[in-house]
Image 1 (cartoon, helix red, strand yellow):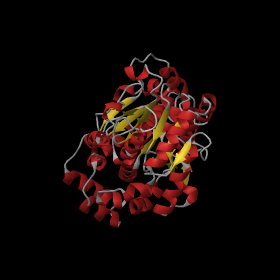
Image 2 (image 1 turned 90 degrees about the vertical axis):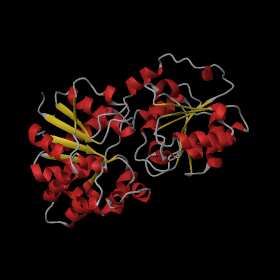
Image 3 (image 1 turned 90 degrees about the horizontal axis):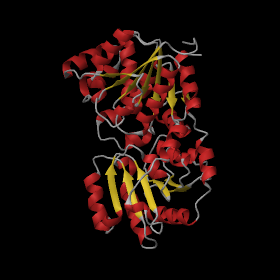
Image 4 (image 1 turned 30 degrees about the vertical axis):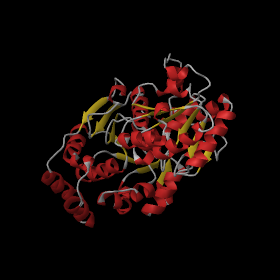
Length: 399
């Protein structure tokens, strides 16, 4: 193996569900493994749609859950001289990742990776505390994937509301702090009171070659047989973050002017509520939510417009994927990422969060005059895997 790559690397994340964070981490894992690094993907949850997409050369380690007392005792040891002990170890309910804290400590002691890259706030905090106990790894990189202020504002648990304070106390112990967009970086610095110079922005990437190749696969569906009814496409977890109710209301307005279909790819806890809203709006016949699909690219390349309706994001990968196959996009101007990806609206219309009328108008305008596909694909090329991999390589090595 070339000396410019770490000998071993662990990637820590909460689960292998179908989110953009998971896809980005799998791309990173495969990139490091291709350079000869021994890569272990360490997860708290064995389930998830991304499990089957883990590269064959990447090892998967699922962390076992421990009893509450064992977790709290070990967390207490992790930071004995701080009020963090009382907050994390003795007071707050422990989330999924911290319930696996003893298993993470065991992994680091046994495998002793040269570097550890954690993704997501829970994983970041667990990684920092685990290294405090074990002294492993030599290089620790934590990465924020979402806009902290939005996560805290929407938080329903005491731990989430405590994130800014915990991040302020813990993240400086990492060797590098990554944000996936400039908006996420600025918000993190301000909300958690971190030094601006301590946060590095590394954009997520899309494997353009593989995604574009997947878009050429045949797809048979009656909704694709009638060009007079354009397909409006969305994708993401059926979760309040994605604000699909606004999209459904916008679609109801669109259908008053043009016949169209709406397809939402993804699964989540809000399915029932969205189905009820669709029926109440009278759009049930033109609305489908098939759940997670293995090849969203084949749908994106055939859609008239892709819509991101999110209330908040970090750097929405689905926008990059849509651009990669030349699909026109409409996006909320949410914090953070869409404005950066779409270059202030040059590559897709930006509309206010939660505004169904503005969303409907933007969808209709995009369907009437879509931008050149070549321009959209050229923009997606700016978010290449090579740039992301090189950035993380440098941070993992400390060079």
